[in-house]
Image 1: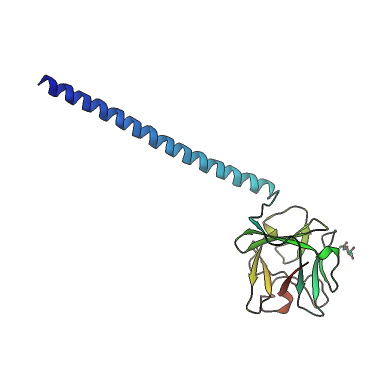
Image 2: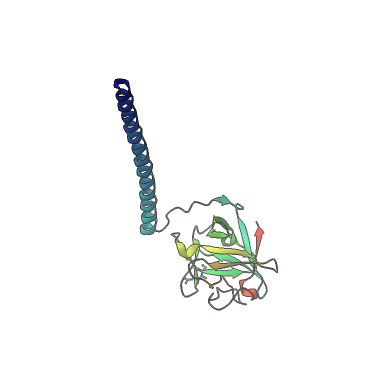
Length: 188
Ligand SMILES: *[C@@H]1O[C@H](CO)[C@@H](O)[C@H](O)[C@H]1NC(C)=O
């Protein structure tokens, strides 16, 4: 009887220690999960506050390239130093662009000479901006005709487009089937 009580006591103690251990383990687990979530939300908040200061591409495509638009006599997209976007037939120094992937199928475009990011406003006007923001994210899509279109990620159905004269064309209501929106990436 005595030994049975001792056995019971030992079992209860073991059980208590065991449960305590498991609880601590679970607490720590939840704690680190909460910390992780908190850090994520802080990061998110910081990015929202400041815009995205230094976009970090997940992979580099090519060092520099030209974007040729198949409209009119054919134009190379340029980002001028005052932020004007327009096409020019013969490529110049403002036509060299860095196209970098931010997510799968989503790119940012930066003029190498001007250092400006190509961005799209809500009213469909393309411009060069010093700071990278969500306006500067484009869906890059290879169309059936082998041309590439760039549509704004934040403003759906707004396309990067050039007019027959090579000027930036308002990107609303142009659609992906018109030549104004068809670009051919060319290695420079
Ligand atoms: C921007 O710069 C270009 C080239 O220097 C010039 O032709 C154009 O008029 C300028 N645009 C504005 C809005 O200042």
